[in-house]
Amino acid sequence: MSKTSRKHLAIEEIPSADQFVDAIHHVDDDFSGSDLLQSTPKGLIYSLLETLGSIAGDPDLPSHLRSGYEGAIELARDVEARIE
Image (cartoon, rainbow, N blue to C red):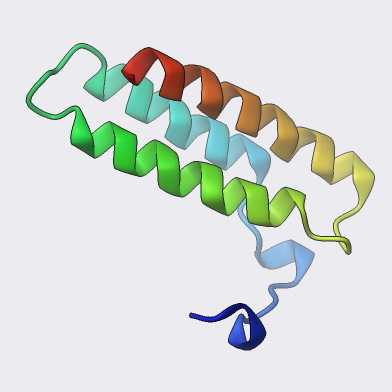
């Protein structure tokens, strides 16, 4: 989907930062140390980082919500570093 045709979600429709943190922990817990599945967590973390970056970069996102998403981004980067 191109950026110009991207549907803008209302704040209420965006998953909470806690939901992203739960997803990141799931990837970290279920896939850490498994060489056979290493590409799976890399892809999942990449997708989570891209999604979180889009949400945190939204100029209409209130700053008090932005901090939660930025925290989730840092957690995802830590997990990404461990997977690498």
